[in-house]
Image (cartoon, rainbow, N blue to C red; front, side, top):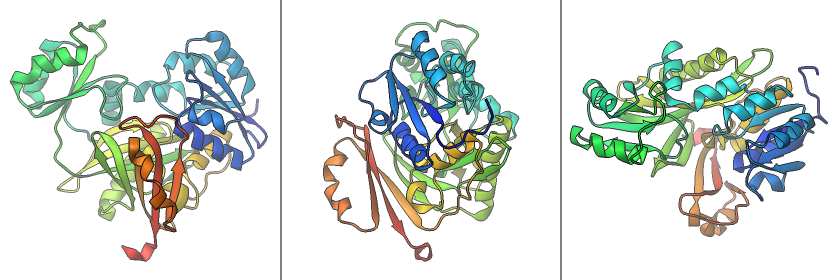
Length: 369
């Protein structure tokens, strides 16, 4: 199997959510088929993919059949079990690698990774037990945020500790009253509370040849721990933007990445940049690229994993992307009649509170800021 995969090849996508849906559409635009693997039936990606396998991530027979059907595989969210990705990688290339996924799935490994590449983070400590938590609070101080080391997203698996007396109840709540099964692998991390002026993110793409291209930094606003808006460009200094881009480039290089990685960061009042977390996959804060850039994050990922040259990710418009969460989707008619708005609906059947049902990107001219 050659490293470059030409149009006509089949791309496997692990996960069937809205990111997989938009990735499948980007692949089709470039002439590739897609085979989605997802445990949930009628997932958003299944409606636009060439093929879909609905099976659990530990179904080895289904995994082997999936791997045999594709020329390359990738993933659309980082909670796919690493054992699943590692198994597939023995039969077909997986880009990015399962090793990048392993780091992104564990907050302790992730923070150690960024420390190793010279990127600053909020003060933090690994936590194995309540005693660890008490010691960590003495080092980090309050307020602080206690987070599960694994499987947390959109604010899930994290608790704010405002004073030392809250530590025990926070630990019981996070562990559901059960002691962690391992005393060597951190169950959680404690992070010092960061006073920041803005939250930003940078998406970096890296190809098979080591070429790297970064989308410029964007500014993110969250509500109830879920991304609400992304504004491009971010309202930061050129020096801060250069620092943020440099962190994303170093991360892609250190991961030996083939694909894309989104790095979320805090900007402090003095212009410093602290890394929060990363995701080696398409990212919600990159949706604006679909309409405001010469290329977009999904097309760039397809180019990278198939060995095609990366595109220049220049921005041609200012943009504000707004997530449509839950019943927000019921107010979509106003966006349809606004010529500046680009509307995306993900095809999910039930509008639960906080669920990402679609997004809208409103463009404006570069000269308007």
